[in-house]
Length: 592
Image 1 (spheres, one colour):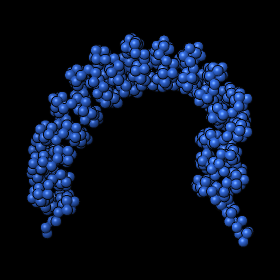
Image 2 (tube, helix red, strand yellow):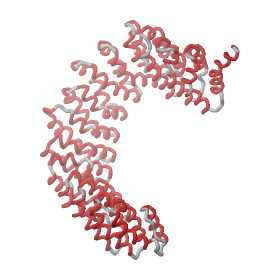
Image 3 (tube, one colour):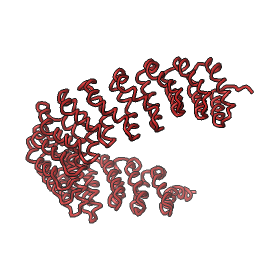
Image 4 (tube, helix red, strand yellow):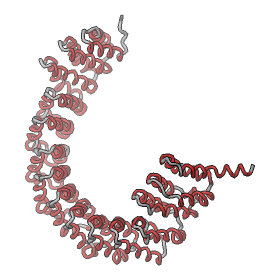
């Protein structure tokens, strides 16, 4: 009996071993994902003495199995007996941190960082820190790259002797022969700097930062730019000029566009980190150069930051800096040869109007907005239209209508239907920004003209647009301005336009409510049931089905039901089908 018990207790590990040796990857993956269940069945002691050694010895598998294992082990602390035994998880994770596949290594490092917090300071020095040293001095670059991500988590909690060793190891990795290792060190430089004492930031980190920022590989140099933000926030203002700025100036003019791109991308963060004085003297000229860069990607990244950069300039001379140094560059970008640059600029340029005020906006910015509204790239135009509200706040509706509205009207009548479609989609937004009176005066006729456009997609979008406008301006507005025009199209000689009337009624009935639908729209729909064109008649059936829920039961019984019954006996198959569908949907009892 005791033997049977023994067999029972071995069962989970035996099954796991079998599954992990199975040829089917999916089966192996599933067994790894069940590891916590197996560990629970084994208990903490056998998990430590049998399961973990077994896992450590058998780490030769497909990457997805190893990835799952690395992730599982990060949540294993309680399954090995809690924090005092957490160091038992280090051997398998150490092996995983040296494999060839990057995602597996990264996940192992993530799990190691997680369980490092659960080590006591003593265990950290006895077990964890030696692991970091082994990885840092490993023969393969894979283990050395993994070590870079572990220094910052153990540094704050170890003795000063061990701290000195950790700093030495990090220094060594920053000048490693393999670019991949230097890249990993550069990517963790800012994080490591944050846990160091200020004196060591000045004595150690700055020299490493300078060296990495001058590395022969641009992929290392650009990561040093990221670290620059963290380092600059740690240093007192008086040290920035001598310790950080020479390297940053060099990065902003780097021969590789990727490094310059990174400077442009991080510009707002750099600006906040170095403060107003350095921004004025150093970053303004650097920003000008990035806006004029020969590479479109760099110009686009810088253009994206224009509004943010201007907002964060010191208030006392903000306007003067923008007008003298930034605006001339912005004017050039408006007619850039690259559409991504123009589009990036168009998404933020409107924000300058709130910073520069009414007079400057009218004199300097409006001509730029106008040029962008007429740009051949649709994205540029739409970025301008979707941000009109902030200009409206600054210069007022009249000024806006005189300058920008003619350009919008021009686009609304563009020969390319996709351009017209784009403007329609922005009409509710525009209407909300410009208000009902202005809309009626300037844009209403456009919206009605789209309903009879020769492209179906435009007619469909125009119908949807009307519904959104009614939701915005209300049923009374619809009754006075929209409904009469829509119903007038029911007598149009072109059957496509007559059908548009029906589509509009479908879209507007709910927003307009029962009274308008019953008194004004329903009679027109019912009259159209006698239309010569079958397509119109079956759309009448569909419309009656759609507006049915808005109507009262009296109208349904006395007006709608007889018409649907008549359509259900139509000579056209489709008309019959849709009429019968409407009848069954509306739960009428059709008399036999």
